[in-house]
Length: 319
Ligand code: A2P
Image 1: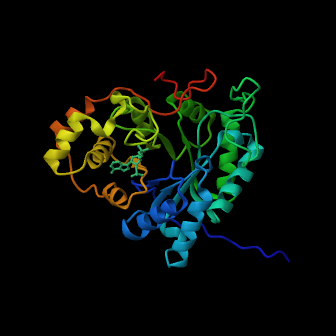
Image 2: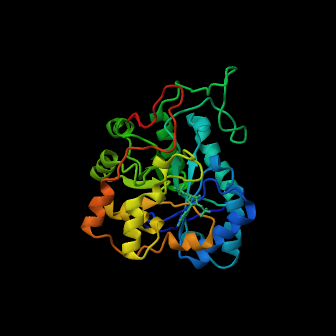
Image 3: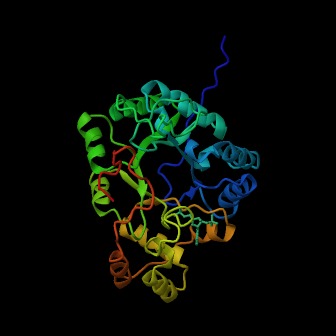
């Protein structure tokens, strides 16, 4: 008889409103320490991962250490994502199984389609950006996002993830899912910060009961638009002024502003620094209405990340 292990998918009822971002955390020991510190010392219960960040096996090591020290699997919410080269429906189950093996888990809490653009199918370890002889990314237009979404339902049904969602989807793409009759995503994870406040998309998600999740809440200062003063979110003079008024750091004011702007939203600030990890979840204060209005006016529709691929504007808003 086969030795089957029945896994009961226990977990937190709802996605926790702050998660630890892990994109660009590539120093192994620093990342292990950051994950352990966040969970054990800083009250985080949510880690956001993706195979595209090339560090899931490191996070898997940190999680093992945490589980060995008494933390239970169901106490932590773990998200991962399906990369663009795995959109073909036959690739989705192998992709999540690969991620689970790297993270050393039996199931995820949430699995997202990382972006709506299908690239030419490649094995999970073959690289992220298949290119033609001219160095152009090879987009696979034969794979329908609805078929990928159906395959996401399948991996949920067979117990590999508790919830499924999407990332970098615009309103049109969400409408395609809605009018296909398939279930709507649990979340849509998109860029969200002072200069990219996402009013229409937030309204759409709220109206359709899709949880709005924001990545790069500080505008990804370490990777986006280096040297561009217009892109320096945390250096915004109004943000700094309000942070002085409140006795908080600009990062804390930024996060709290985003939370108050969209009640119930989820944010995943990335840090590997213990002081900043702690700071980013210590948000027990409020901005008053004048402070909120002032920061709302800082909207610049300035997208820091995600350039259109091969003429496909993933976000559909031209920013
Ligand atoms: P570090 O990891 O050294 O803390 P985003 O989440 O928008 O992509 O931003 C991540 C960047 O912001 C990283 O460079 C991270 O550096 C930095 N960062 C994270 N938390 C804070 C904070 N509280 N104050 C200032 N910078 C921060």
